[in-house]
Image (cartoon, rainbow, N blue to C red; front, side, top):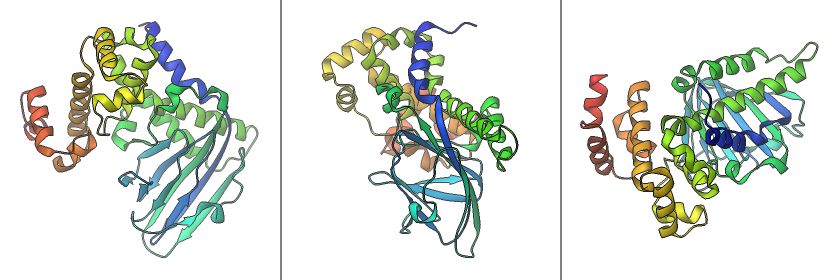
Amino acid sequence: MSMHTGEQDLLSELLRPIRLTGVFHSWWLLRVPWSIEGDSEHNCAVLHYVVDGSFWISTEGAMPTKLHEGDLAIFPTGVAHRLSDRPDRPGVPLQTLLAGREPGTSARLTHGGDGPKTRILCAGLHYDPSAATSLYRALPWMMVLDRAKIESEPLLRDAVNLLIAQHDGVGPGSQLITLRAFEMAFVLILRPLLNGIMDRPAVLSALEHPAISQALLIMYSRFSEPWTIASLAHEVNMSRSAFTARFRELVGEGPASHLTSYRMREAARLLANSSIPQSALPGKVGYKSAVGFHVAFRKFFGMTPGEYRQRL
């Protein structure tokens, strides 16, 4: 099936920075207690893959997120963040543990006490700053793909396995192979963000409008944040009334109902493909109120989240 021009446009806008200029990657062996403060990276995305164990990621102004074995986190714009065995533990600056971190090199890091161990593959993915479009900068500070989502994307799963297989980084051409392997993984990590667009062909015509395409990307990648129509309009530099009217004209429904439907489909995916407790579901899809989430879910699917999971 050929890809619609609008979809191609969004894909190219998102992936334009992805031709990497260099990668620094490192293998971390950490034992409880441990905590590491990563600094802000410029023109560099950061990737963490949990080989085994678990850890927390936190940054100022956001709730901590726990990652488990097989999960992957990407920081498109290299926002400073802390990795730790528990979210309230003060960290050691990464610079004191891994100084330099020059593209094209690799390292191993061992840190912490003598408790349970966690192993992580970390990478700094350097890209040309002139190619970082406003659409790319609209990506959330962090995106997490859980193990189930990675397993459901065969190309992404194979790319991650290739990264793991390249851990030695020796032999002819190994540096170039590593660079291209990370580049491919980066593209495949971002690609699931387009699922909402692929699921809704009527949306494709909206992608030619810069502000509406940016709003759609925010909805599809940052749906867990407590957006209002006013805050969305402000984010894309439009008045609320103009944003609502233009969105409805191009997408075929209002921004509130479009965001709600995407959140409901994501909630259904989590119920089907993960063991997430239902109590944690509202916060995962942008609802502060459990009651509000249950009302919205029942209205959308005609059943409660519990009934939906039970039917599966």
